[in-house]
Structure formats: C-alpha cells, structure tokens
Image 1 (cartoon, rainbow, N blue to C red):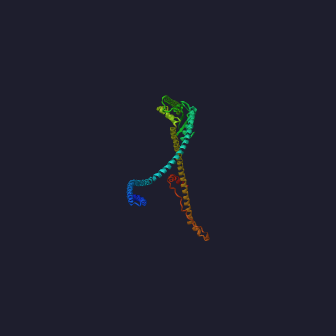
Image 2: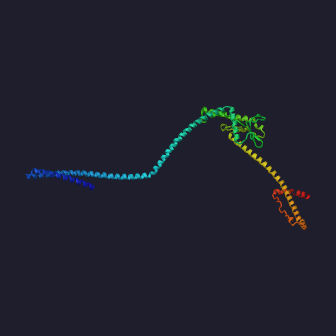
Image 3: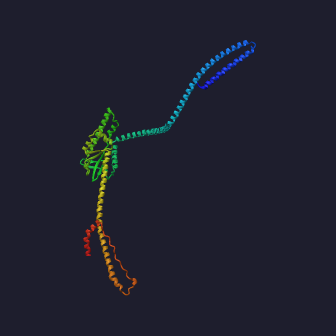
Length: 433
C-alpha cells in the first residue's frame, strides 16, 4: 500500500478517537457536577461510563477497521486504476509517438496524394472540356455525314444516267493523264476519228508514244448493276444475298460486253505504228476489283480480245512511264543537236587556227624585215652620214633597236594538227611569192 495513503488513514482514525474521548470527558464532567455528593455513585457511574466508552471505542474501532478495510480495498482499486491509467497513458504516449512517426513517414505520400488530387482535378476539367468539344465534333460529324449521304445519293442518282457516267469517265481519264505529266495536243489528243477495216471509230483519247507510235484509250463506266449491288450488305444472306450475286454477275456481263465491243473496233489498225491493243479505262478501282472478284477469268478474256483493263492507278503508272520516255526522247534529241554543234565548232576552230598561224608567220616575216632594215641602216647608212662635215651633232639620228619579241607559237594539239596538214601548201605559196 502507498505510504501517503496509510498516513491519511492514520490521521482519520486518530481524529475519530480524539473526538470520542473528548465527548466522553464532557459527559463525565457534566454528570460529576450534578452528583458530587455521592462518591460511590460517581465511581459507579464513572465505571459505567468508562465501560460504555470502551464499548463505543470498540464499536468505533470496529467501524474504523471496517472503514479502513474498505479504504484499503478502495486504495487497491485506486492503485489498480492508477496503474491501469498509467499503462493507458504510456500506451497512449507510445501510440501518439507511433502516429507521429507514421505521419512523418507518410508526409511525402500525403504530398503526392495532394498533387495527384490536383492532377485528377485538372484532368477532370480537361475531360469535361474535351467531352464538350467531342460532343460538338460528333454533332459536326453527324451533320457532315448527313450532307455526305445526301451528296452520295445525288451522285448515285446522277451516275444512273449513261450520259453523265460517260462525261464523268472522260473527266477522270483527263485528270489521270494530266497527273502523269502529259500535255494535250502534244502528248495526247481527245476524240480523234480513226478509220480502219472495222469501220470508223472515235476513241476518247489517243496517246502519242516516242518514235511516232500511238495507242488508243477508251473510257467506259459500267456501274448500273454495281451501284444496286453495293446497296446490299456483303454479309446479306437469303434472297438479298442471291440478289446481290445476281447483280454482280450482271456487272461482270456488262464489263465483258464492253470488252467485246471495244476489241471489235480494232483501233490499232487505224493508227500508224500502234501496238495491237486498246486500253479500256474504268475510272474506279472498285468497279474493276468487283468484276475480277466475281469472275477471275475476265482478265484473260480481255487479253484474248486485245483489250487491257486499266483502273486509275494502273493507267497512271503506264502514262507516267510514257512521260518518262518522252523526257528521255527529248534529252536524246538535245544531246544529238549538241553533238552536231560541237563538231561544227571544232571544225571552225581548226580553220581559225590556220588563219592565226598565217598571221603569226606574217608577223614573224615583218619582224625579220624590220630587223634587216635596222641592221642595214646602222651598218651602212649611218656611218657614211656621220662623215659629212656639216652635220649638226645636235640632230644626230639616234640608234634604232631591233624587235626581239617573237609571236607566240600555237602548241594545242588540235590546232597544231590542222597546221601540219596545211603547212606544205602554205610553204609552196610563200616560195612562189
């Protein structure tokens, strides 16, 4: 038990015993004053009071013992509670310390989470903004799709007309030819009349090849049945699938009929130096591919009729080759002209070399004659002239120097070879002079 608790209990017991003794003395004195005349009675009373006081003391002591026991029990409970509170306080301190340590450890995580929260907020704002823009773009796309559908319907309605299809095919043919770099009325002609044993013909275009050759091109758009077949899904079955197959077979028949008609016109017979074939231009890759898919033998059939089926891609590649051939032809012609010009220039340079050599010989002869003249003057004339008595010495004829510079000779092989060939004639002409 704690010493402070025992001290408190002892003080309480002492106070109670003192109070009881003081009360007993007070009662004895009050009764002693009343019965002072009878000592025996007083002694009896005193013994009785003493016994009563002892009984009360015993009772008080028992009560105090009981209170002390209760207080000890209470003190033990208090000690237990204090110990429990101490343990709880220590546990709370340890828990607070652990929490502080944990908070310090997760501080970077908290900062990262805050930054992530800000990033998520920014992304959410951007998502909402992009969602609005996407909604606007979807509305615009829907409007564009509707406009495209209307345009496609209008185009399909227009292409159902044979004359419109023909104009469209010719326009596509012209676009492909011009994209390949060919020029109208130079590299190709349109709507040219051709006459042959098969009769008069009028192909849509005649392409001129290098070397005076040419080839005919005819544009055809067999797409009536194809448009109807395209409106049916590829995955269609039953009656719709059978109808789509029937329309594709009709499309193949239209292409075959066009090949037969074009091969029978024999455009190559009416052209000068033309390969024995005609190009059948179909201005859509899908028209050609769908026909080949439905009938893989159609290409061999066209070869048998001397007809070459050409889509925009294949025709462009062929025409690009033709344009390159024309460029090479022009380069070859220019190179030939340049070669002829160089030979003419070389010949004229050789002739000019002869004139230059003749001029050099003339200059050399002039220098020789001048030197002879100067030598004769100094050796023969001036000595005789100085002998004259009346010669004014202030007006003496000065001495004349010789010309020592000689003309530069030609050393180039091309010029010297030409001079060597003309030297005998020149020497003979000089000797006669």
